[in-house]
Every structure is written in C-alpha cells, then in structure tokens.
Length: 139
Image 1 (tube, rainbow, N blue to C red):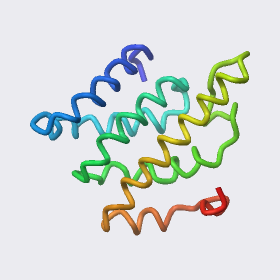
Image 2: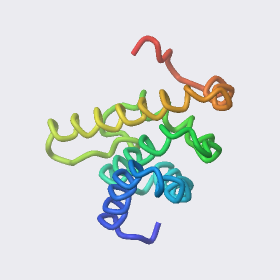
Image 3: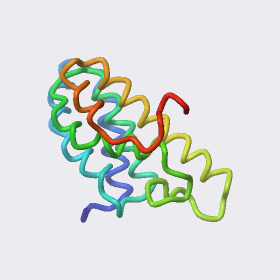
C-alpha cells in the first residue's frame, strides 16, 4: 500500500466509531474491501493490521455485505494460530510484553470477526471450507 501507516490507523479508527451511527453505517461498508486488503497485506505493520481488524470487527457485526470477508477467512484462522513475532504478528520489537499484548489483541479481533461471520448462514460454508492447521476448539 502506498498510504502511510498512521493515516491508515486513523482512518480505521474513524470507521470504528462511525459504524455506530446507523445512517452512516451503510456508507462505511464501502471501506470493507480496503480493510480486508490491508489485513491480507503482508507488508503492513502490526498497528495497522490491528486497526484494520478492529474496524472490520465492528463492520462485520452489522451482517451487511459480508462477501468481501470470504477472502479473509483463511487469514483470520492463521492469525489465531500464528506464533508471536511471526510475519502475521510482527508486533513491537525489543519489548516482549508489548509484543505479547499486540499478539493477543490481534488474535482477539480475528476471533471476534469469526464469531460475527458465523452468525450469518451464508458465511458458514466459507468458514467450514477454510483449512485450519489446528483444531480451533483446542484453543
């Protein structure tokens, strides 16, 4: 992406809060494909990925236009199972406690999105079709 990380974080944060206003919520749905792209982009930092996931968590709760999320399901499972410090969880360097908090926050947002998506019957086949490396139930 060619947009600076702090700008993306601010935009994602704005989407999180605007989502709570029902009249503006439908306009925010247009942000979902871009937020999904940011989450899938291996070159974004941990803060940007977390901000994107937080916005997607709120937007996925509405149950509107979940089609863009189908590209994200596999990555969400990967985020749940990836180890701290892996490319999926780059986190802060040099501070083990901050890295662990960042890892936990990313996992929590990924799980929240999966829960929101599982409430929609149209998404269930996509959730079941994803390849999960370990049984999620064991987590």
